[in-house]
Image 1: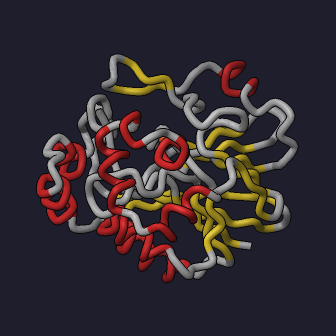
Image 2: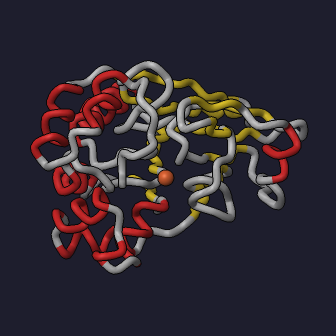
Amino acid sequence: MRLAVISDIHGNSFALEAVLADIARQAPDQIVNLGDVLASPIAPRETAELLSGRNIVTIRGNHDRWMTTLRVEAQAPVDRFATAQLTDAQHDWLATLPATAVVEDVYLCHATPTSDEAMWLDTLWDGRTTTLPDEDEVTRKADGIVYPVILCGHTHIPRAVRLHDGRQVINPGSVGLQTMHGSPDARYAILDRRDGRWSASFRTVAYDTEAAARAAEANGFPQWREALIGGWATPVGLFG
Ligand SMILES: [Fe+2]
């Protein structure tokens, strides 16, 4: 069994297109998507079009929830821009995404099993860098989840952690928005189950970051350029 795990596309159709081409070469049995799909100043509608009609198990992220439950005036500027770009059918699709899902023996959540906003495998310091929290804190958030693999996204930082009882918590990183790890390339993960054991491998995919940055600028969000073309920037201020 082979799973491709994508997360935090953030409406970056340029990154998604490159990642989907790379995934096709990996020939997975199933693709899963951990949310924050369309919140973006880049290309939310085109991103929804790229995903449409594919058999991808998708859950919702905090931005997907905000785009479909908050009044437009209450949304952050990037979410408001993205919401306005969507067709009614795309908006309806986003609104129906579940908070969590299970595929085979793999559990999917956006941030943690009980929150779509909490940090799990990373503590954010001064908006500039992250570190792995201590073991007790990481383990506590997996309480009650009996599956051998727990997938999460949200922090945009790829990590694979194995708990003492053998369960793994895996974050594939972000397809569309790299911050704080010094590379603009799109990220996702491949999971293989052999002899009942899951192994993860992380992939980086180069894509046309300049085109994505230009689209963000043209739509009125120049602060995205530095993150998109460099991957070193802080996430602070990108959505506000
Ligand atoms: Fe998120």
